[in-house]
Length: 156
Image (cartoon, rainbow, N blue to C red; front, side, top):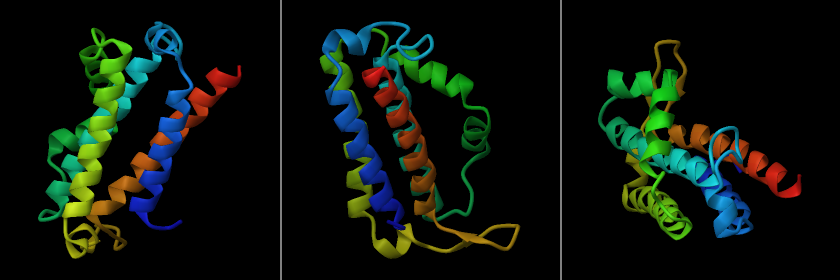
């Protein structure tokens, strides 16, 4: 599975399967994942899905994301804290719906953007090439890390 779009879909499907196994109460209980609830992990992931969509959209016509977005990627703690805080008042159903919507927005964007734009070759300063859609590989890896974390909670 080398295609970034296939990778993000698989990782999202795995997330959905893991999240479906949590009760509403378990989803909103603080301290399940460090200091976060599972709901806050969902908020964090949804925020990164939205960030990835913005990054891909920008890179359809520009070789780089704005400095602010690059800073968020390099120092994600403030971005993560803001994302988690935004969902603190969500009940489990609201969190599930918002999480699903964030990925649906990303998927819709990917399926409605011409393939040649998503896979536009961008030469990096080191001489290697990338494409706008390569952002999905990092998002899929990130999703997979959280799937493993959620599975450990469920099996633990």
